[in-house]
Amino acid sequence: MQRPDMSVAIAGIEMRNPVMTASGTFGYGAEFADYLDLESIGAMITKGLSLKPKAGNPTPRIVETSGGMLNAIGLQNVGIDAFIEQKLPYLENVNTPVIANLYGNTLEEYGEVASRLDGLAGVAGIEVNISCPNVKQGGIVFGTDPCAAQEVVSLVKRNTSKPLIVKLSPNVTDVVVMAKACADAGADALSLINTLTGMAIDLERRRPVLANVTGGLSGPAIKPVALRMVWQVAKAVSLPIIGIGGIMTGRDALEFMLAGATAVQVGTASFLDPSAAQRIAREMEDYLVEHDIASVRSLIGALEV
Image 1 (spheres, one colour):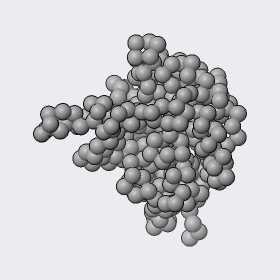
Image 2 (cartoon, one colour):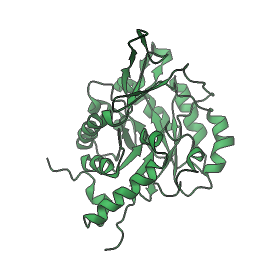
Image 3 (tube, one colour):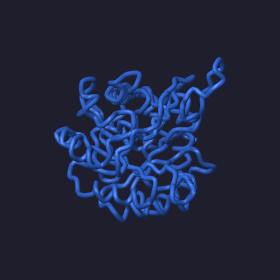
Image 4 (cartoon, helix red, strand yellow):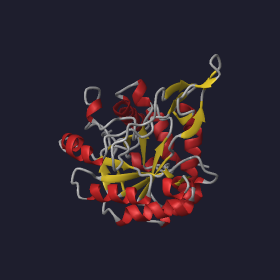
């Protein structure tokens, strides 16, 4: 048979295959150019960008755990100005869509960063990290309160004409409520899940391992939770969904597509294998060839329940 059609589209962003790199795990793209062909994957997502540069949390801020890792990097990044001046010119020469992840600690910051990204031809879309505290409203996390989520998504939507992806936190009572709130506010797509809050303890020192005490759990340990949430949200909203959480192989990625995802993001796997995103895309294609499946899109939401 002919090679299968691996192409998918997310809110108008055309991708050669469903594999994207997850924000915070792939730098700004250039860092991984020696390890894989950047034009072999579907899309690249930048580290989360803020209005001003951010140094992040004190160390230690990464620890390996059973089936995954905890990180408390603290959204370290170069800031929107340095990204535009120093990082984007390289990415503009790569024939792979670039999606800029952004965040803020106030509504105004979200709106300003979105506005700055809007006119950039080298940015195909925006992914909004709403797992941040609103410092002006007592530290309430935008992504755990439906009203706060609606407010920030609506503001970003007003400040950009680019496709808007909202990244959902799993640290909520009902992820479907949050998904519907973001859809109602104008999101064009949803990505899920972000990391689960966890901690690790050094028994000998009787102290937390991370300087920040808690961090975000990622890796294979969270895959069952992520699959469940993707499946729930896919049944509840009509937006395209990007599945994230413990994707280490092509088979993992295809499970997310069966649950309802149109595309996937590879994160923690890139720390173990810097070429993981390219390998996973190839493994997905090999599976389709082996099973005589003409298009990867035929698997989206095809789970039999």
